[in-house]
Length: 159
Image (cartoon, rainbow, N blue to C red; front, side, top):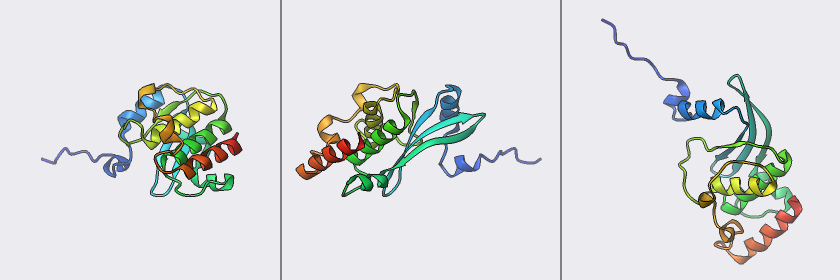
């Protein structure tokens, strides 16, 4: 008798995709505000899915902030907020749902900082106010006062 073991999808075996979560997001029929973290950057995307195929309409990487005068880390909380804010300005006042991928839902995280940036730019994304980081952390007050000044300058240029 042969074993009846079924090999899982490759992306599931590699730990890259949660197919149950993805199916729920796709069945909503709404575009997705996708936030991903790398070792150096924060990536925000506005993605539309049609018949299971994803199409990235707009994408912003936090390294683009250097063009607007951002100096320092491109993966901290203020950089995540500004990246989400820039994508929100590019997309406009559209609806979307948050796609966090496999990242754990941690109150005040960089994922939610990017969400807050998109919300402040005018996007409509369902969320709970409790998970968003406080305003002083978004501005970088926990880092130092120079980051707060730089944050205000860059945000003014993004408008």
